[in-house]
Length: 272
Image (cartoon, rainbow, N blue to C red; front, side, top):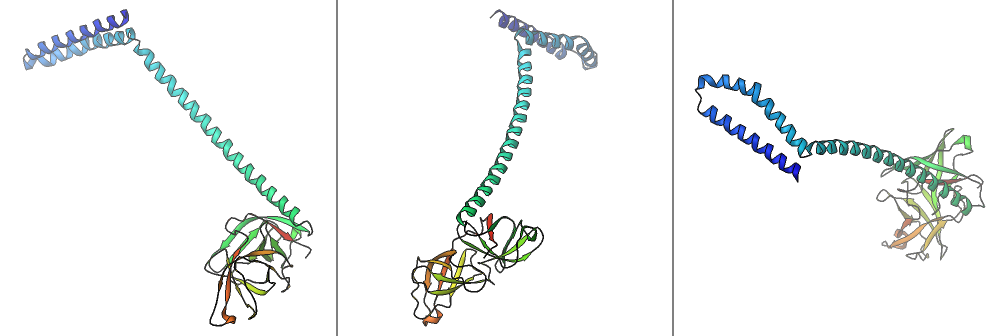
């Protein structure tokens, strides 16, 4: 309380000095203004600065600026810690993704334990209207050869069409140049599933026999015919049956079991 009173008194003194100076300047000839300005700059201004400093000191204003500087330093420290935490989080996400891929590979290996398989991770993909191919990170050095079947946890992916020492290229079943011999699960009718240019996850089932009974919602699996794919691998589900002008024009649309846009991990069957 006493400190605030002192600050108030000093404020009054400063105000009185300023008023006196204004009176002097108002009643002084213009010729003498420059002289008075010089006197004010030399004598009065330092006094005002000193009184202002004293007022701030009495009112503890210097502590305010010290606190501001302290807050700035603490803010910089928090920024640094936040940056370090973000880096740690990024590293954690990378490790988490790597563990998830290893888990997927282990699950695949257990699911298809009857086959000799080699796990691979997709490192490149070409999913355009006409070409739907994948590149995986294993090749001839790992025992990969052309025409080997490639699968995922959900079902059939495609087959190997070319290899290098370290990589392999996979033509997926949704590629427009691909044709897969299949069977319907319920009625065991034969169909040929081909890739379409309209949708990355849709196949068109054609070559339907005139006596075939294609059922919407039925599942499709590989027939083992054609010399590439082994029998019994899940391909997808019939989502729509389209009737033509006659039975031979009919076809069905198949939703693939594999989501090719999100696919990351595959298995290559080497003992088919």
